[in-house]
Image 1 (cartoon, rainbow, N blue to C red):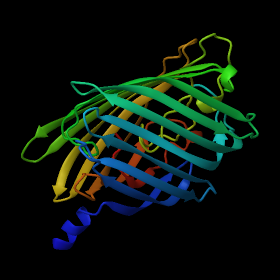
Image 2 (cartoon, one colour):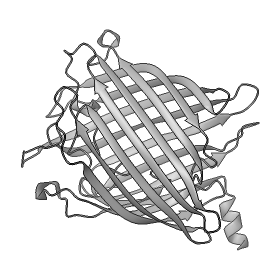
Image 3 (cartoon, rainbow, N blue to C red):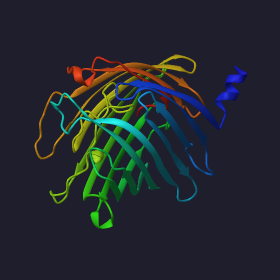
Image 4 (tube, one colour):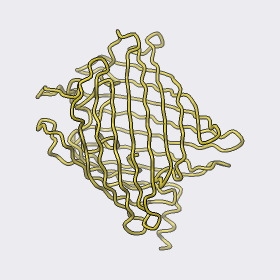
Length: 338
């Protein structure tokens, strides 16, 4: 137990990262996390770097984190950046694609975003959303540069940032991209993220968590063609696990997901999760049966900041063989999905 306590107190830790999804095959990589408390800050800061390579010859690297500054005028700096070289497939736009054959292309994307947030009374914070995206020329589209700014507002009463047992989180952000400033098109992107965490049983520490998430990528003048890389898509590691990312994309996304988190023993936890959602076109709404993903997983708490090592197994309910809906998805990574 003394060795375990020493491990839980380490300010940094390196973790293996393994996952399987139909869009990537097996993925192997690593994540390095450092966590610390800045002077006079009430919350723990986190910086994480990840890198991975897939058996489909895809690779990516990312670095990001959340820094919490204390003092008489506390503020938060959230940032992320990275690059990927991803042979992938383009499945057209919409929530009911009929094409049996997707188009192959290689995504060479670099991105960076910075969000400074200035804390206000009663758990509120306001700030600036800044984002830069580069997409190299490929067989589907030309070279793309997108750069934008916009406001962001946040409300956060979570008791623990990385494994909350109670509290509410809400964040709304806008991004405006302008061709006169070098962007490929005029774009307004609106996103909203609402999460709640409920402690169902104080003795057994059972937690119910849910998230409602939406993204709208809009052309404000109605004439700009938005690059498909800037359109939201469901599926992936965090949002509607079990659904293949990239198949369903359009200019609006609506999703709802929930988890039941249960302690098993000491630092080991289990979870059951499910989510529903879809993409839509704001000019021609096509309301279809939402796609759903579901599954179960295990969590290992790796330090006293409650940062977890996550293993999930997920499936989906999409009744369409060419989307590989019968395949399971496996995720072995760090931190919670939401």
